[in-house]
Every structure is written in C-alpha cells, then in structure tokens.
Length: 318
Ligand code: UDP
Ligand code: MG
Image (cartoon, rainbow, N blue to C red; front, side, top):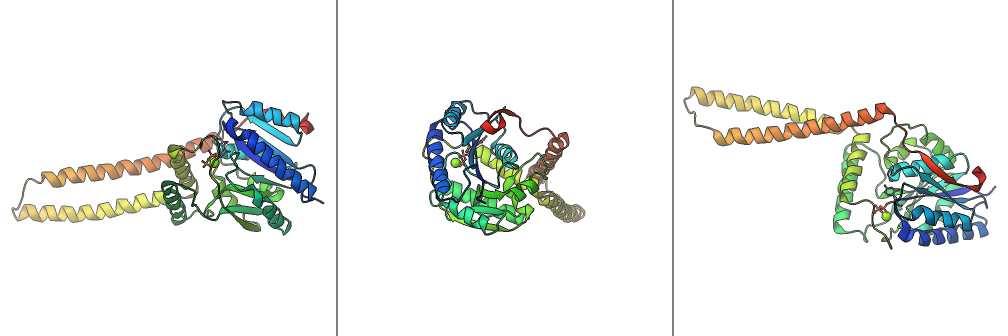
C-alpha cells in the first residue's frame, strides 16, 4: 500500500508567499503521486493561525481549485507550536504520516522523498537537520549556538540544528497526543517519544517574501520557554548560588569582626553599597526564575484548551 502522506503547514500572515508555496507544494505532491511514492489520498493541510491578512482567502481559493489542498482556521493566533499541533492532531487518524514544514518553504522541500524513504525503511520520526547556517546572520547563528549549548547543559535532549521540519508516523503522532502539557515545545517533546528515528540533512534557504514572525523578542521567549519546560536545573543553580553567597558572607562577617576588634574600622561605604547592589540583583534574578516556574505551573493547572478550530476546508468532512 502506498503511503498516505499529509503535509502540515502552519501560516500566520503569509499572504505574500502563500501562492508560491501552494504551487511549489502541489508540484511536489503531484510528482510524488506520479512516481507512485505516495497515495492519491495524500493532502496538503494548511493551518491558518488566526492571520489578519488575506491568508485565509488565498487558502480558500487554493482549496476550491484543488481538493487535495485542505485547511483549518484557528479562531485566534495561538503560536506556531499550537498551530502545528492542531494540524497534526487533525491529520493523525486520517493519514499514515505527516511532514510539518513552514509556509515560507525555507526548509528544502526537495528532501521530502528522502524523508519518505527513511519512513519506508521503518523510521517513525525523521528529523530534518540543517547542514549549515551560512545564510543566517552572524547574530542569529551565535544566539542559536548559545541556545543549543544551554539546552544541552541543562539536560534537555534536543536535536542540534533541527527546527520543526520533520516527518512523524501515525504511531509517533499517537504517542505525541498523550503529552497533554499546555506549554508546548515540540522540539523537546518529540525526542522523548523515542521510537526508531532517522535524520535527513538539508540547506535552509532565505525567506523569499514576507517577513519573519520570530523577531528577537519572540525568539528569546521561545528559548526561555523551551528551557523552563524541560529543565529544573535553573532552580538548582539558584540554590547553589545561595549556598555560595552564604559561605562568602560568613567569611565577610569574620573579616568584619576581626577588623572591629583590632580597632581597624574604616567607614566601609563602598563595600556596603557594592554588596547591597550585587546581592539585591542576585536575589531579584532568583525570584524571577522561581516566578517563571510558578507561572508555568499556573498555566498548566488551568488546563485551558490550546486552540479552537473555527473552520475546516475538507471535502471529506462535509
Ligand atoms: N507561524 C504561525 N504562528 C505564529 C508565528 C508563525 O503559525 O504565531 C508560522 C509562520 O507562518 C511560518 C512558521 O510558523 O510558517 C515559521 O515562522 P517564520 O518563518 O516567521 O520563522 P523563522 O523561519 O523566521 O524562524
Ligand atoms: Mg521562516
């Protein structure tokens, strides 16, 4: 039996690039169908993540022209990770495997046949790995490096240079659906599933139209989310910092007492001011880190739904 493959493509304000993406993806799917690598039931599933531009209208036109282009419209902008989850959850019981990719096609779709070969050879998860970051700005490359190194040091097992370009089989998707946490960081969760996996290397391209939806602020938030969702080490670091400070302050106290009894008391304005600022800063930072985790617990216990599907464009569902 030929593989029923679904491409899951999240889109947020992508009107500028959508037509190009639709035509490229359709070309790829029809050549795969012609070569009998995938079944004719295979689909391209767009997930509109509450776009405020003409993205949904463009998707509708694409669906009317070709019923293998289907779509979900989320009621509100829920973020890339939730949009991916919405698409994968919808696809889970309707296909054999999904490949998730960005709407801007920065991930090289010409390696999709390699994903399929790995899947046919038994891999349940195939990770798309960037072979280099030559096209990125020096800043993005450096910050990405720091992020991966930090994640590794903190004990979270994530794939180096892998974003959300990956194939997942139905079995892997079913396993993923059992992770019900609301702070979703797919790159961290997917390796936890285990199962047989493979890697496919590709060169990531530049965005050809529209602009990134991940400006610096969002990127830092995403990294902080990733770290606090997968590691409690920052909490341990706080405790260790606290112990070190306490030990040092005992030494400081001894020094002060000895100075007092030897009559060597100088008005120590500098030392006092410095220690107040330093300790105040460390304390605020530690409280902030604790707050991050408490915030996470707060959003987890509420168990709010991650998204609502507002509209479905899929002839099978009518
Ligand atoms: N995206 C989304 N919801 C958001 C932000 C982004 O669905 O709130 C989608 C976006 O349309 C794109 C993908 O996520 O398909 C990756 O975004 P982008 O290309 O802007 O990120 P970058 O490649 O710059 O990291
Ligand atoms: Mg992009």
